Every structure is written in structure tokens, then in C-alpha cells.
Image (cartoon, rainbow, N blue to C red; front, side):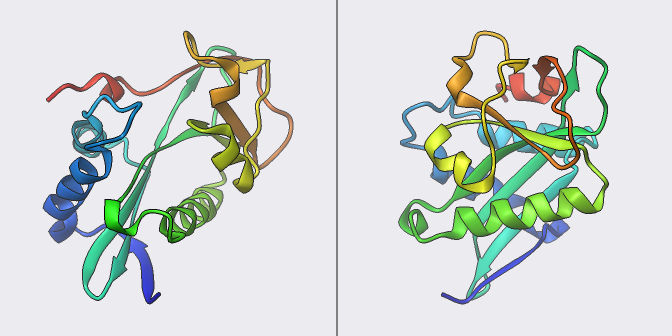
Amino acid sequence: MGIQIRDEQKTDLQAIENLTKQAFLNAEHSSHTEHFIVNRLRNHGQLMVSRVAVENGIIVGHVAISPVTISSGARGWYGLGPISVLPEKQGMGIGSLLIHAALERLKQFDAQGCVVLGDPNYYSRFGFQTYPELYLADVPPAYFQAIAFHEPIPRGEVVYQEAFNAID
């Protein structure tokens, strides 16, 4: 698999939007607004990390990371996602490559840590785990995980950017 991971470029924006739509089209727990979320994060300067996976000149995956707010006032925390991989390329490790690359880039920003909302079995492979003291309102605790680059884990409620409410 000749996958190259790189930062998004201006010429990638339409391909990222199309990819994100396709990736979540049949996803069980999707709002089908993920492409709006990515665009809104980008348009509001909140897309801190935006990396693509390219195979044979075609974008086959994308990962986004944006800042989150924690009620305790802890700073330097970010949220992973959305993560998109073309349906026909899912299960081939592209998502894993993107997550590793995104977390490494985040560490370069001297981030304190990262949170993710998703399948705990999948994200635990990257070091994410549940911390009862760090939570997302109205979400079962098992599905909200964090990874700290520098201890300790902060306490409090996490709030994602307003862009995550985008519907268009």
C-alpha cells in the first residue's frame, strides 16, 4: 500500500469534502454533517491539524483536529475528528496511519492532550482511554476517551467548537 500522509493543500478542499461525505454516507452513528463540520472548522481558523492520505494521487483519507474547551480552564487540549476514509479503503489501516500522523503533529504544537468521541475498542489502540473526571455531556463515558501527552488529565466537561453543530 503506497500511502503518503501530508498536510492538506488548498487544492484538496473539494476532494476532502467529497471524501468525507462518502465516508459517512452509511455510517450508523453519523449526523451526515461531518463535511460541514470540517469546512466550518477550516473557515473559522479552528482546523489545527488537517492531514490527508494520498494513494496514487487520489485522496483516500482525511483527519481533522480542533481545539476543545475544558470547564476547569485547562489549556492545550484538542479533539480528534472527523476522520474519513473512502468506504472501499476502510479496514486497510489508512485511518490508523492518519491518527498516528495527526497525534504526532499535535505533539509538535506542544499540546497537552487530545480527546475523541468514538468506539473505545478502536481508539484504545492509540492510547486513548476513559477518564471519569473528563467528560462530554450527554455521552456514555465509555465512548469519550482522552490521551495525555503531559500528565495529569484535567478534570471537567469538554466542549467542542461550535462548528460541530454545523448543518450546512
